[in-house]
Length: 516
Image 1 (cartoon, rainbow, N blue to C red):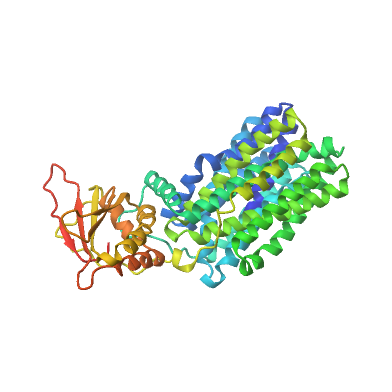
Image 2 (cartoon, rainbow, N blue to C red; image 1 turned 135 degrees about the horizontal axis):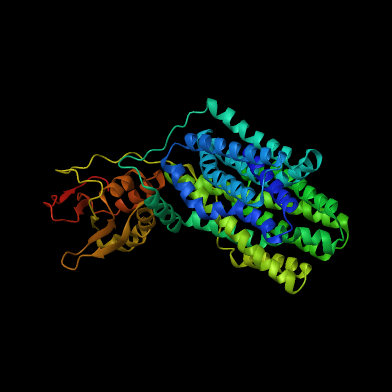
């Protein structure tokens, strides 16, 4: 939470500082762009890096970057040497550092607690981040008014020292997958492929997109609500922000125990409904007290929804892809907030702020009703725990890592009475193959031999095939074992591994009964 506080405080102070350095509204708006653009530009890269490099090293390096950049801006502001361009460049650097830090930090939560405490731990971690995002701007504004913008920047820099000190006693356990390490480019592709073929992950990210796209209306229009709808000045806007922060604290206290007792889908739906009604309450009122109640409820709903979805993401992804899953969730949140803000801002400018708020709330409720079949859940231990390592491959010559593609054929012999059940069961294998690295998956029926079925899939390289075998979770193994139960008694499941030939001598084709 300390790092998130330092980051959000810096962004808030930078925006105010820019307003004192120039009268250009564009430059003031570009501060927010400089702060958030790195998450869109480098988010997936950051997640991939955190999955293939020591997370402790990434966290430590980014803290020094954040500390140095923020302190430099603070000192320059104190001495009056800070210009608009330097402020934007420094803010972008800080945003990039925070983007690289966040996936590594959030994915590391699972390494610090037992599986029994995982749901509460990831819930608390997600709550801390979203709570900091809610109260950081209010704290920054108070410090800037009290001690000045330069000193406020230096104060925000101190929060990064907290993490540097905390890292002294933490040893990164590492999450290496056997074989040749992934590259950044292939790692990004693998992360996107995993999300595409993981229904729980898709559901979580989609619910994030829906919520943030609609919730961005209140975030984007809160200053206008204070100024035009409620007739308040800067102090009134600060009061609304503080009320939102109080609600976020309430949500932070409520969410972890709720995640432990209730299904994740129930908690998320409750938060979405609360946000919609809080937004409607603000939209219809001109009374400050009622608006404060609405802002407080919105703060609680914000933390409830995003912290719960973040907890679901972290509990659903295996360790080898967890940081990438976190990064994809963050990119989804940032992009939907950015695009949604433009949409609701345009509607408010064309019609009215209250209309924009009301439409966003009604849209959120309508999308919730339309997506009732898209249920989110916390991941089970079997979903993320790697299964037993498969046996060594019986091959004459080990291919080179880049050799490929690799064609795998799994041959089944199924009795007539079991064929329909077998074909239904084997369809569940496809997502496990694809999200772990396979492509072009399909099951074929032998026309010349009754009851013979062949599962075929392709992997791009030998190195990727080695990683695919090591990525199998307990749940994946259980799905494969259920399919194997339909095999004709006394007949082994035969597996053939074929590799694409080159101008060199072709490797021999191998066939055995080992696990694929």
